[in-house]
Image (cartoon, rainbow, N blue to C red; front, side):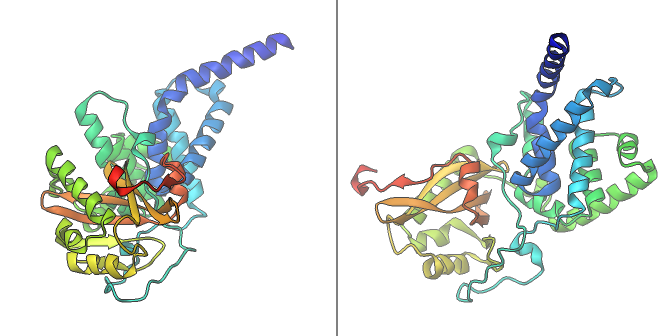
Length: 336
């Protein structure tokens, strides 16, 4: 019995040593498929459990990385059989609304979630690989992916993100290369309509981005409405699941914050910087007596001319996922 236990432990350690380096990219893969960081974490655990159980059958006909992605893809496709797509409010098909319209929540909708960069960031040193990984996690792309049928979604991710050959995808999905190429063509066409091409996204320089984000923090913490107007581009979009409405235009967005945000004035909001989906984000806290409590998590899309899109996520569970504090102390304003 002791010998068997030693062998089992050795096999377990060997599996973990070889498989663990792929955990981040498997989480990114499952997140692209599911649109939920919490679901993705569960499915990565399921992937590792299945891989561990069958590791003794792994014959090395493909790389361990490919084998793990095969298992993860099958796990995701099975999970998607019983799950609804995860939209953002802009993906519900309704037109944008006015800032003065009533706020309507639909908490029963399984909304899209952001993912912390630190959980899925590429460990590669090649700058091109890092940029490609970041672009494949942008919020607009993840939102667009959720509107694809699951098998089309898998084909597009495997072919365009992971760079698998059509024959490899066909073997995984038990279909033909012709069918894979057809699904890929349809997926790309639908994606082109739903998400901006990466070449169309012109981000500000690093220095300009820092300046714009500093202005963003100051404008919100001061609740300076005129400064908030200046942050956004003319056709910027603001959305905030689980509220189903979305808002377009700098003036409309600023009016929404002026009239619907519970902050009454300077010092009622605090913003803590973080990163989500390769984009700047913040944990936004609202003052409650002598502490600040989690309120929402905005993820920003920037252009050279200003903020083009903000998705504010009101699921405060995300603060723990992003490693953000449960509360913040209220400090004298002169000390800040």
